[in-house]
Image 1 (cartoon, rainbow, N blue to C red):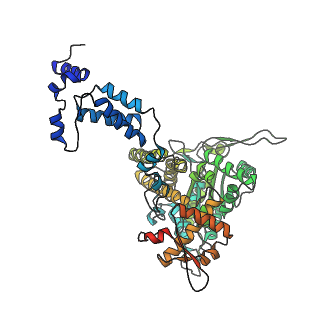
Image 2: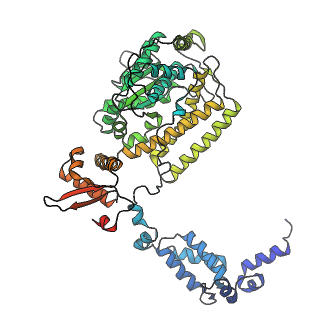
Image 3: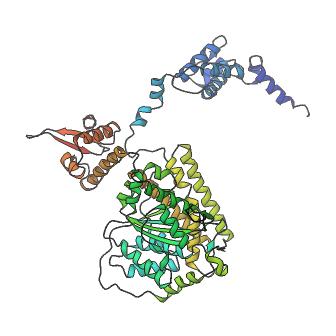
Length: 553
């Protein structure tokens, strides 16, 4: 290598011997320090090591690490030591002080541990995506072609029309019809698990009837199932009918029994649903049975259209269901208010819907052998759609990385499946828009990406509001929910305990334990009022205008 230029050699010499070269190369002097910062004192020779060690001790006491202290001391040495010490000497001082343990109390005060433990409701959270995106926008309930047509027929014939339920049912129906018959370049398939959450009387049963009628007219009535008896039952059903649609009401009851670990059969059902979802593009090996060789199901397609009451569904979730991948596989849609009732709603099935369903029933991408060992048609993706997919993947991966950085395991589990769901939805969109020549276009990617992102954020928000780590945690959240409903109706008025007790008829001890925990977490306010009769206890959620006296009470 050639010799370095003169200016670089001089600068390197200054780093090796700063005391002899500092003044010549712009190192600080006492006059420079005094002129630069009125509050900064120059540190003269003979005091530099001791002073830097004391500064490092102050930083270490409140919990700063060796590298953090070294960075600060390097700046102090550069700006205030006259002349500066060698950088290696400064780093040695920081490393020496870092051997001592921080002061726990001083560290907690400096880092605000106590306010972190008792943060007020609504304050910023370390978990990404905790804001509520609200119910799904109406614009995302539109998919051209078959899905739109079935959805409109469902609404036209419903005693109480509900767009979200109608869309969920038609989306799942199209997913079943295309099952085992199409794939994309990543070998994604159309099997979907869709849940429509609605209160009683909204019209969940009508959607199931429409799907059943369409499948019957297409000669596919054998694809329908209505309940899960066991994991083995699901397996046997798919062995007989490799593409099946289960329409299950009150699915929250199944999940609640899984969360409470009351019956191993229900745990086996969830395990089977997990396996079937991931086996759509592979071969599923069945359990061994006496007197029969072990059989396989080639590319099973299990679609699920479940319904439940929103609050009951989310309360049935446990931390394990949120992290084991089950919740991540679901598409959850929440209905709005009950539609306006009407009579004389019977309409025959449009011929176009029946024709489309029969077309899918008769479609054999690889001939008559397609039922046993299908070779699905590859649905192409346009270059612009591929670029849109790449951008969507980057956005989802960035959110996953944020969850990983803060140790948010439920967030990681659910965001890990968001991109896969978007790919499946885009494939279903293409099949609905043009069954004979489906193509994944930028329009289908824009819809599927927006749908998957919104649905994932909403699902995480709702799960964190209601899903519980334990029975006690569930009671804590139920009390907060009761107080939240009270605030929506009565503002910042105090809620009498007797009203709470009517909604939550727990024992006095249970009420005291939940109340004390929420008070310690500063999530509620509580006081005892004095009247002519018996003292009355009142509760409310914290308010921005609450006085210090009320907080102490």
